[in-house]
Image (cartoon, rainbow, N blue to C red; front, side):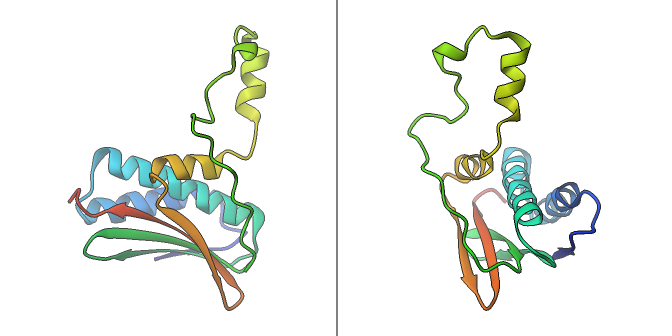
Length: 145
C-alpha cells in the first residue's frame, strides 16, 4: 500500500516506483510490469488532478490476478469514454504531413488516459464508489509469475 496527498511531489512517479518494486517482488517482469505501471500511473494522475485526497494505492492478489486499486475521496465516477474499435492514437490522413506544429498539437491533447488504461489492461479495469470514496482498479493476470 502507498498513500499520498495533494502536496506529495510528483505522486505519479512515486507510485510508478512503488508499484514496479511490488510487482518485481511478486515475480512479474518485463512487459507485464511496464504495462501495469503505465496504466496505474494514469489512474494516479487522474485521482491527483480531478479528486480530493488523501489518496491510496493498494495491491491485492487472488489466485487468478493481481488487482491494483487507486482510491480517492471523491465518490463521483467519471464519465467513461467510448472506446473506438481502432486505436485512438492513429493519425488521420488529413493530419499527416503537418510538421512539428501538428505533432505538438496531437501530443498535447488531453483525455487519453482512460484509453491508455483500457488498451494496456485489455479492458479489465473499472471504478466503484462507496462511503464517500471512489476506487479505480485494474487487474493483471497472475499467469506471469
